[in-house]
Image (tube, rainbow over all chains, first blue to last red; front, side, top):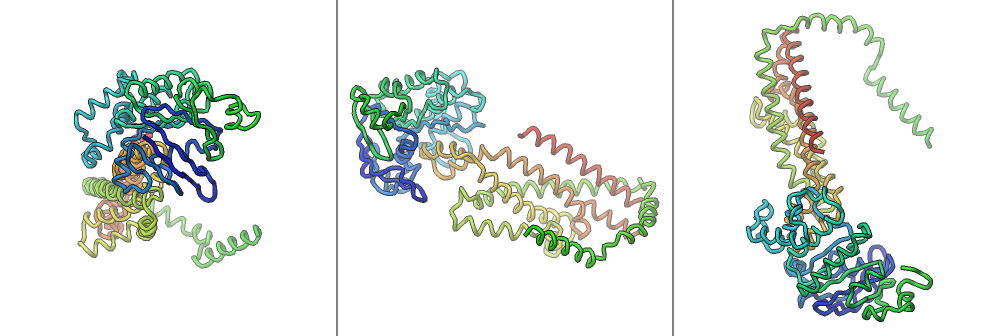
Length: 248
Length: 246
């Protein structure tokens, strides 16, 4: 589903964020990316749909090329990749359901959508997605009046409205009350199991990562230093990811 | 260094005072004439109130129409001259053009447009549009440069086109600011429009200038009073609206 070869990202002027990453992720996997801050987790996720431009290497998602894609091809492949951000990144002044509706932008007629016209079936789909994350009753509330947990659910509904093949989530629970971590991760697992979507999630909490992942990938200094099932994550592995004596 | 700057600044001011003939004694000597001027303006001649009010209405119309047209014309220009939206080959010429046209005042534009389309309120409207478009475009572009990156990333990630990203990622963030800038410009344009009549571009300024030339000071003072009340009224309404926006 995701094929990454020789991925290198140098952020100006000379920061090497990713230093030769090779990774293949199969359809239906729930991959959790572990690593200390600055290890390249966010950069890796953002390169998968070219929100960050790679310096070298190739990325393919759902059988389409991401690197080397024309603008139109890139938009087509981005539709297939839902993204959930640490800071939710909703459009504050839009209501919840309209935020979810923006997930349809890659599918609807561009000019009609610019003047706010969306086909009725897309609107229905947006309401349906909001219901699936348990927020149907808050459809008309402005995004900035919702709690953090609710905002992240709206963001999840927005990616569902994209009908994606892959969902990338960059520290989806890091900005939330710890008590909400499990409900958000549980929602992601349900999407993974029920819809068969591929999930790639970065997490800094080790127990959470081990509880939800089908596969763990450890990053350190821009390289993959571990790749295996949660059961193989032993104390030496943790040390190899986070460094000696460090507690994640 | 600091002393040198202070010295140069003081020297420049002193030279400017000498060159402009700035002389407090002359002001004091002139004070009786000032008082005489004020005395001759009183009481205001309320007989000219209808024409003063008609001029005020025209002035408000010039400012409203000119500001509204400029608010819309400035939109594309604002996006084209925002560093985080436009590509450098577009951004730099757009910025340069804005700075060039913005350095000309509304009154100067009015002179040009009176020459082009003749006397009356219409060249006044054009003058307001010309100046306000560029000044609003500059304010718009600065608002656009100050937006949060996050929602733009999120909309980009849905596979949206550039135009859709502007509409859903950028515009909702800047629209309240834009509206507030437009209202602020409306307030300043009302003031600018009061003198457009001096150069034949319509509105209340025409009456003020006419009565001053005719040395009909009571009539001129009525026009001045109406001007002050008009400006205050527009400021009041506009600032109320702006408070609601932010």
